[in-house]
Length: 67
Image (cartoon, rainbow, N blue to C red; front, top):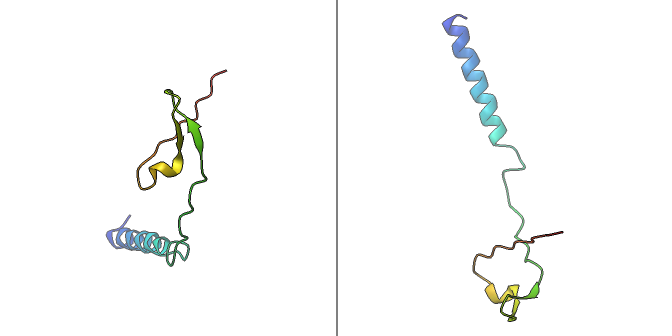
């Protein structure tokens, strides 16, 4: 491939890549995050807990199934 053709191909590829980055679905306002549903349970010590007790903290839920 000749250098001028190679440069044109690179520029066209770069322009198309940048055009894809400015898609309307990525620009504009985003939806507000939804609140998690209230979950209640009992831990291994028998203490009851609610998900809302941990508001503002990182919580990892592990729904382990064993059958």
